[in-house]
Amino acid sequence: MTLDKIGIAKRIAQEVQDGTYINLGIGIPTLVANFIPDEINVVLQSENGLLGIGPFPEEEAVDADLINAGKQTVTTRAGSSLFSSAESFEMIRGGHVDLTILGAMEVSENGDIANWKIPGKMVKGMGGAMDLVASAENIIVAMQHCSRSGDSKLLKACTLPITGIRCVKKIVTDMAVLNVLPEGGFKLIERAPGVSVEEIKAATAGKLVIEGEIPEMTIA
Image 1 (cartoon, rainbow, N blue to C red):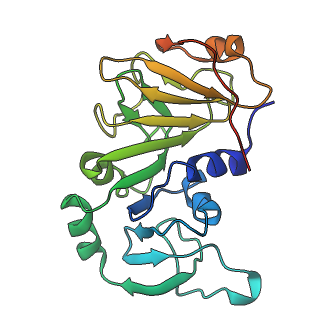
Image 2: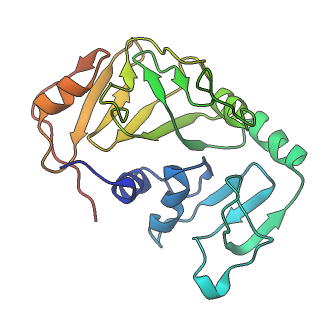
């Protein structure tokens, strides 16, 4: 049984460390804000100009003027601040974001990421992804292990236009948690509950490194 989007977000929330500044990309990453433990104090940054994002609002608390980069309504925490997108990208390009969590269409075994364009399909722009992957010290990707057609999205080399080179450190999919090794390759760290190592092997086109027994994820 593979994880749903909520399960992926819950597992990634376990990677969040106290005292860090974090940017959450569009899609599954935005869900992570709802599952960060109360005892962990972090500051969530949105590239459209918001520092101090809180969980998604309840229906009665929705404020249409407070949105993240994905145009979803959000809440703000005590001490939050609003500013221009230009200042936001000064923070990002200046290396002040400790962790970026973003989605991807493909990741290569060398840590390259493709997440902004599919040839032949109209896109409004690359957003802030290229700046984020070039600047953050730590990058975690949240993604489905395979495409809707069943093709692996963890590849020897990306086939789609590249967003960043050798930048991804960790990947959490609906099937597994994997580290990207400095010398290349996906090291299997954990598997989703009920998913076998053999199933992960079959779903991974890039080099997969397996050492010892692989534990199941613990999803609260």
